[in-house]
Length: 329
Image 1 (cartoon, one colour):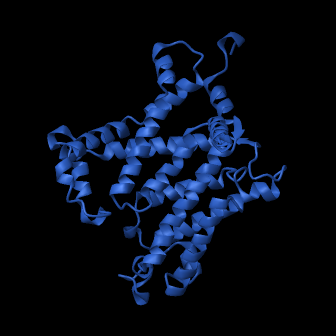
Image 2 (spheres, one colour):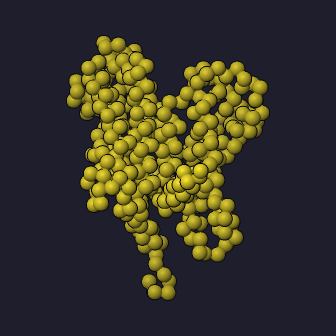
Image 3 (tube, helix red, strand yellow):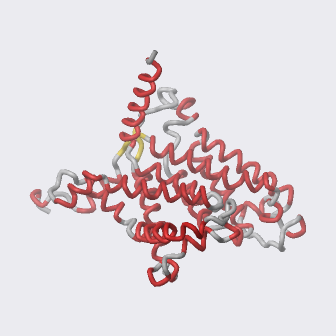
């Protein structure tokens, strides 16, 4: 290849994957994943349904279980004693993820614990459990405790909770791609007539009235039927259009190139607009429906949507605002 032709596509991709940046986004992602683990296991233990969900019928479960995961077999099967211990260790592992102690080893151990628990009775798990497992594997592959962690305070070069040490950026890119993949495939699978104009966009309306998902009484929902129709249509369009996120990041990475569409997307920050809609959607679902850890697990990936430099600028602004408020008489 001649020098005038410039670097190949593979070279540009390799250079992008080799990019290094502060670990702020990965640390926030780790904290979100740790909270998701707690939000998955703690309610099961506190509500008293752990025997029903994860134990063999001989110990209070609803059916006989034949579990093939190595960890469950190692502890003697889904018995009352083994499941209380494993779920308790899972709670401890979630806490260690939140405070950032143990690095990749903690993430690996947590992942195996959650995979073992999910494997006991797949009928009681959901797509968010698979997403949580993927998130934990990504933490195994990433230095997520390089900052905002007890590891950074105890073992880092400068022994500070906040560390500017650069790490590989590609795990953050993978998290973004995982998020886009989830939304795209979810939107493509929503082919029922309830999601379409000829079904009058009734999917959200019926979901809010489903007893198993109700957080509280939703007798008021029929009065807001037109709003549920609008929300249904916007949600489906947003999900199938989520690959626009990748286009937005490409435009941001090549902002020095010409093009009216590129300039417009960067000026309006298409990436942030898509993220704001997603955040509001998940907060709305969490407020109106009891979907378990679904929203929290998914929102954990949102921490990777912003560059660490953007978090640094936001922190400086918040710190300046706080100082200004404290100086007022």
